[in-house]
Image 1 (cartoon, rainbow, N blue to C red):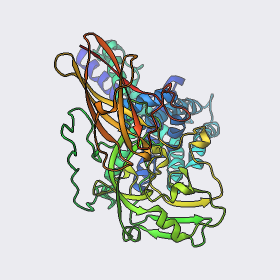
Image 2: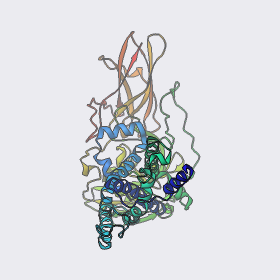
Image 3: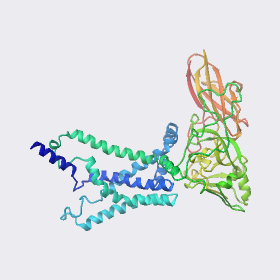
Image 4: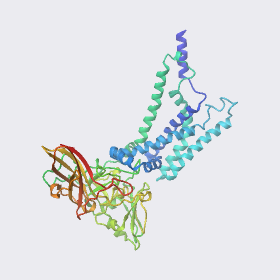
Length: 538
């Protein structure tokens, strides 16, 4: 008899279906339905090689994140910081989806309880769910940078109601207690069953967050499978040059030429635009006598210019590693603009990217001989994360001015860039001397080394200060001459110190003799100034 009861209980558990959904069940099922609908929308975006439908929301999250927190995340996580905004956007969607799901009928079928809910009311509530879901995705679709990105948003909204109808019985069966089966019949402790169900719920959520948050990675793999590979192509043989001064490089200091894989990456996007070089076009428009349109092959056929340039992020503090140096290859921006013929009245170049980003350069800076439209880094074509197939390179300017994925250059009498519209006033990068190495070097001595950058003026000298003393003689600090005036320089020095703890600061003097000023480390709105400092105990 006990065996028959056990078998009956097992069958009851296997075939159990909820007939009524309380609010907490509908709320949880709404979150699962949201993940399923977003998954389909993300898949469409990946197939179309456009940003995911939550890109506008993740961008808004990055814009409202306090600068200090954003800087800490960038410093700690580097390129991994941007996907956090996408994960945050997904997390914001789940409670909204749960609230929308509360509008769904509480009964499984319209005819399950005809005295409380007839078929017409049942359909009306499902229609309300569908309408609310579409209303929530409407801003995402309207703010999308690409038509297919907007379509992916609409698709996710349209699929929410069907996904909720499909998933909610499975959600309840996998995550909620079986109210029709007693704990005695099942033979399993209630606590153990509840723990397993919570594990299933959290496991599905975590797996979904990981999958959606890593959109950039698997969309890139899919793009490669669809014939849009990310593998950089070799342009010419390149080996970083050896040091010019004995004693360099110093172990612990970043390489003089940053490998492409290590070059810092910061973007307003949680998922970067995917631009196929075969489909890419560059337009020069606005106040020009001869508008120009060039494809990728035509641009590569123009005379190539190679130059070493250091880029520094405006979000970087004096000791930050959001600064890198590379050999860039491209075409002269000045030559291209002169070919188009700037008209009288043109004062700025507004550089557009396909993700809705745009930044300005004074026309004089755009016509500078060092300004490039770069398609290569360290002898290889640009990877997407670095702005491939084509990016602007404006030496001496903060990184955000060096627009990635350039699609159009528009000459205008005046314009405001993306970050200027949000209160930033920064443009030219501040000089900085960074201390990468500080270690005891024999009795009563410390070895210090690092890199120094002084914008387009070049590095002239580096000085050190111990505690509150005077700045050192410039001859004390050895410098490996920079590869170009627009590149950083490595430096080193050995200081004789008394026993105890000391605070050491560094500053750079540029090629024109201008001394790096002190500052308060305030990043917004003009970029941080000040000295990098370290402590050493002898």
